[in-house]
Structures are given as C-alpha cells and as structure tokens.
Image 1 (cartoon, rainbow, N blue to C red):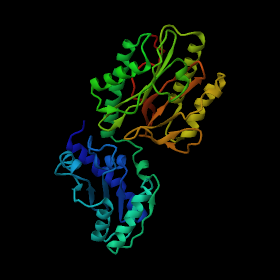
Image 2: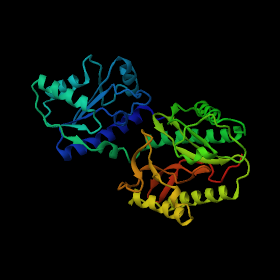
Image 3: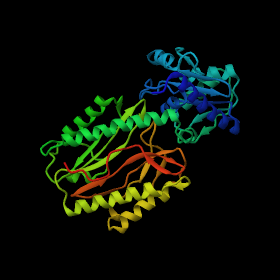
Image 4: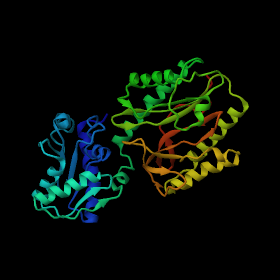
Length: 376
C-alpha cells in the first residue's frame, strides 16, 4: 500500500480536480456524504464502513471532515499531520455542522450530491434557517463519480493487489472442489482462501452456482450438491484497501459435454473479441453490442440479457457502464469488467469475467487466471 506521503500527493491531485470543477461551475463549496466519494477525496484507507456517519466540506482553499469519536482517531492517524484535511469531531448533527460552516465561511453557493437523502436535505434547510443563512444549493449529478473513473497509480496498485488475491483463491478452489460438496461449502472455502491470502474483506457475496443454478446470473449459493458433469459459475472478488476485485470463472466437474464446450467457447470468443477491440472513445453500448453480435451469430442471442460490464473501484459497480442503453464513453485510465455470459434455463450457465484498465493501446486485464475451460 502507498505511504502517507504518496497518499497526500494523491489527495491534493483529487482535491485539485474537484476545485477546478467548482471554479468552472461557480460553486463556493461542495458538501459530500457519499462514502466512496469521501474515501476517494481523503485517501483514508480502511477507516470507513457502510455507515453514513461523516460529512465533508470542500471549498476552493480548505477541506473539512466532520465525523464522530468512533472514527476520529483512525482518520487522524491515517491522514497524518501533513494532510490538507481538517478533521472535526464536534458533537453536533452533520446538518448543523454544515450550516455553521456555511455561516462561518460566508458560502453563497453550496453544491450537494444527488445521492443525498431527502431527510438530510430537509434537515440542512432547517439548520440554515436557524443560523439565518440563505445560499443556493445546486445538485451535483454524478460529477464526483465521473471524476473517479480515471484511476491514479495509488488506486491501480490496490486494484492489482485485490486481483492477485482473487487469482490465488481461484488456484486454490480448483484443487478443492469435488463432487458431493455443496455450493455453500465451496463458497466458504473460496472466501476463506481470499482472507488467508491477505484480503481485507470480500468485494461482495460470492456467487457459486452449479448445474441449473448457473443459468441464474446472480444465483445465491445453496445446499445443492455438486455432481459430476456440472458446470459451476464462480463470481467473486477480494477487497483490498477499500478497492474491489471482480472476476468470474466457469469450471466443469469432470469432462464437459459437447454443448457445454460449445457454449463455453462462444462466451470466451465474445469476451476476447471485446477485449481486443475496445479502444478509448468507444461507448459502453458499442462494446456491449459487439458481444451481443458474437453470441447472436452463434445461435444463443436469447440467452444473454445483462450488461457486458461495469466500472470497478471503490464501488463494485460504478461508472463507466457497458450495456445496451449506456452512453458512457470508455476513456483511457478507466477500469471496468468484460463479462459476457450464456444462461440456458434448466441446464447450465457460463460467464467469463475479467476486470482491467483501458490504456491508449487497448484493454489490459488485471487477472492472470486462465481463460481455458478448467475441468476438475
């Protein structure tokens, strides 16, 4: 992981990107409550959890973070003395804290994220009235999420380590799975392998779907017993330094039948066609349609109905998206998945997913796990 000095450089660059945007829009301050956005702007690794217990305020020349005693010490320790962030644990509501800052700093335009809850928005209005402050409160529309699309070196190092752990777990699980095990037993072993390899947590609830269960793209692991001849869809990832890995491999228990092999080969061809063709400037819709074309031409067009991919970083699903309605542009530096699949109801499913970065010369997957069909 990066040291504090490197992180402070990253923080200043990220704050600079936000302040350039604020200057263009005429914002005096931006208030942030979204956890991923706060993590990105502070670079405070392994401090935040799922609780929305923090509020950040950024102006053109200052950055403040309001939190409580449960997190204050961790923030102070993690950020260090040279951080541009000032951490405040004053025991008041977040809305009152913001209102007091607006009055103190004489802010006239306070931009807020459109992910803000209606309850907090109304509470903020009440507190501003209490301190006799009138300011414009325009909404951001995913602007910080767009700023996070292009990953810097600090982020890429965490993403690559998360993927290294994920690849190691695949190697382990391939030597573990046997007929007679349940999907839940396989999931427990896979997740334990990631934690043992150094994962800080799991990216999401792992999908282990064998046989007919694999025809459900987001199947939940069950007590179903794995049988010889089953295809098993394994979609999982390690979390490291708050950054996610996301990978899917489909394996076969024993030798695959002709149809299983055929479907696997079509999915692999769709995946690799997209990975080889994508370049900066292509839209998410264009990339998705490329995969659809490969699968449709092979006769399985009715059995691939989800999006081809999504961005990955501080969130497991973030911009950019690649799907049938996506206008997102895939730019240099963005990280996203390519994950075509074919799902045959009552029979089996196949999905092949890598996560990687788009560079000037093309797509570079983080994963090193083979695309060959692994037969256990």
